[in-house]
Length: 574
Image 1: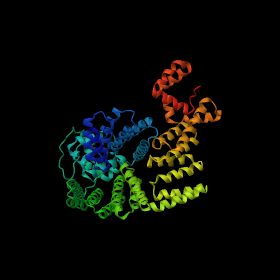
Image 2: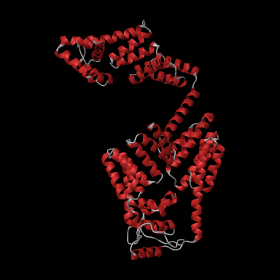
Image 3: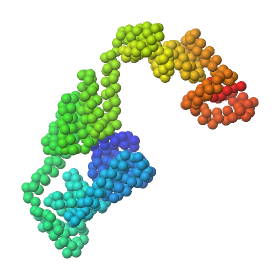
């Protein structure tokens, strides 16, 4: 159940539904509270929601549960960066790199954090804001959360961006002092009461500083703040309200989409776009509805608009990638009629350049396979395949093996299910001493028709020339199960037995024996036999106590393994 909740969380995260992802990851944590990956995933979701205090708590829990897992420190560093604690972020990234020095995510995070810290250091000059330093440190967000006057601002995206900008560069504080919310923040962080134009008196939440300190702060603020025109404040308020209304329209649209009430969903997504044209998720969501309705052209148009607008706004690259992936999916649907998968492949490739998402990669692979299968279907022609096979046979008889291979290959393009062509091409490759290619074709021949004796003959011959006599013997014996009287297979068995017996008697060139043994030692089956403790003891018994070792031969499994070692030239019986 925890894995199921985790999978749902991962899917929601990939789709950009971060609040939903948090909910699923929380369910998974309730079921598996010691799973460090779940806390890591929820930390990432919180960070995407800009809820950095929660992200930090989950990242710290991840590190506590799994201190040797580098990714946990990546989450920890990201949360510290979000909170403006750049020194702590740098320390976290460095700790992760001690565990995994080649981790690219940690390297990138460390470089960004160090660059931000350097920029902050440069900004703290004689002309810097007198209050810039109070925005640094992990307790900033705790104070804002605890103060009733500022707690509500934490749900406003534009406020969070404003705070992050000031944390990155304290000098930018002067740009926001006209915003009454910033005065409230100053009051909360300095533990003082600040009066605004709409406030005669602010009720005290914390002990007041000494009068001279309070007067000094108010004097500093007064010097930097000019009264803001009421019209500007109203415009900002209206903008915030529009954005909030747009999100509400989106939520209603999402609910309608889940109920498959597509027309209603489109209406609400469209209304959301009219209220706020800086959030491309409204476009991608509406594109998803068009996809479900089978209106693929409309879906593609919305995706193109989302990509264009997203790049204008410098939106999150993941959102742009999602739009491109959705466009590719719609193009795949259209390709089933148009038979043209190239536009879809191009869209998926562009999406992957924005963000390498596993789901997008799978869609790309599927589209490329569909294109290849379609090309194969259009090229399929058994009659032409037979003509090409006959041409190949003629060249084979003339011992013009490269020309024969060319025609057999064309025959397989026209009909890739004909085992005879694989058998014939395997014979050509054998003549050309291209043994690996011949072995591959012979195995494909057997795969297509396990009763076709020629496939076993071709495979056994290749293995014999490769001096893998034990394997060739098995191949010939497998063929005889389907065709017991086949003379080629019987001759193959005889040749293999002669070579194996020759090696057992020592009637083999030492260099050839050494070559066979070296090749056999690369065989995984031989390696497993020799690494088996029981078989090692059996071989020791044969050397030190041959009489008692005869008892081992009564075990069929041991006897079979010994025979394989003998056939491979590893063991010689005298």
